[in-house]
Image 1 (cartoon, helix red, strand yellow):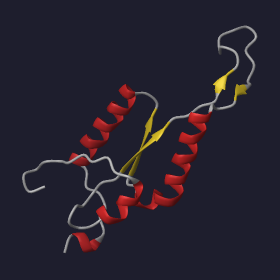
Image 2 (image 1 turned 180 degrees about the vertical axis):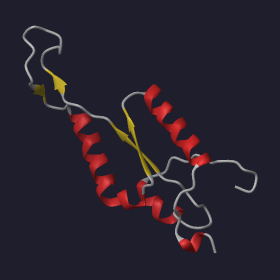
Image 3 (image 1 turned 90 degrees about the vertical axis):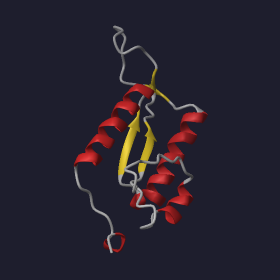
Length: 113
């Protein structure tokens, strides 16, 4: 921080409690997967119905994991980045970092003493 550099770290959720200290002063971003149910029919087809196929096993696991992290660690998260695809996630991250560079944000008072 003294050299005006930013460190980007990917950690397990359990590590957030140890890293959320005045020594590290983290800004925690939860990269949440955008999981949508698959449509049975293409949206533009004449037989388009508003029905959706169930999520596959991998998607169900990702959704359950995201819900668990949100429920148990959401209070430690400063921002949520919704990852629909790599390009949009990258754009969201760049905008968030630019905003952080310009705006002030809340930190616990013990971090500034």
